[in-house]
Structure formats: C-alpha cells, structure tokens
Image (tube, rainbow, N blue to C red; front, side, top):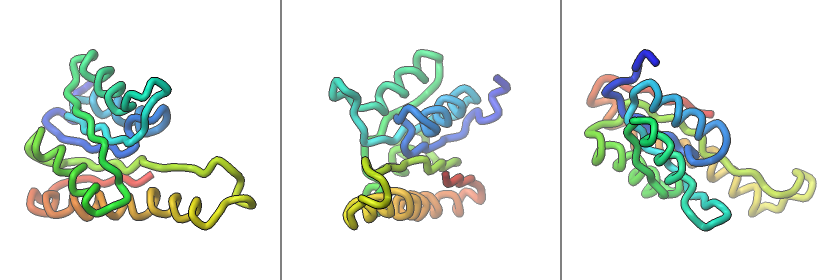
Length: 147
C-alpha cells in the first residue's frame, strides 16, 4: 500500500465486528494509520472481538490498540477518543461504524429495542464526535465519517 495515512491516528467504533468496521480498521492500518479498534462485543469463546482485529493488524506489522468502552454515553465516547490520544498522541480520523440491530422485525420490536438502536446509532455518533472535536479543532485538522 501507499501508506497514505502514515503518522495518522484513527478510531474505528464497531471495529471488531465482522462487517464494515473491521474492514475499515484493517484498511486504515494497511495504509499506515495507528488504529484504535473499539468494540464491546465478544466472540463465542467470550473473548473481546476488538482484540482479534488488533491481533490481525499487528500480525501484519500495523499498530493498533483495543478499546471496549460503549459509544452510548458521553463518558464512553471520551474514553474511546482518549485511548487514541493516550496511545498515539492525537486523533486524526474518527469512523463511526458501531451499530446494533434487534433480533426481530420492526413489527415486533419493543420500545426498549428501538431505543437501543437509537442510542448506538445516533447517540454513539454524537458522543464520539463531541469527544474528538476539541482535539481536531486545536490541530486544525481531522476527518469524521459516520456510517
């Protein structure tokens, strides 16, 4: 790869899942970014899935750390972004991939299930953006992608 993201620090929420978040984390690392893989999920063995993606990145000579905080609280968003700053000195890129889906159709979804979707998909974006913006403004640079 061209190492287009060399010396950049990226946070990928939902980065441990088997979907888009994982692919984004691996692609960013392949381009040279130092990556925070955020995910609260566990695999069938009970191990944190963010750790699996971090292991894959480091096996390929990339730099990555895991974060297991939830995106649904402002405190969680701050801890996620703080992981990048503490480990890599800055936050350059935030990609909000964290998501959830109820196990049943919309017709059968409860109010609590719908609120859970809103909390992860909307409040999760907000909490991480709010935490990342002060550093990005101070740096006069940064990128935020919401999926």
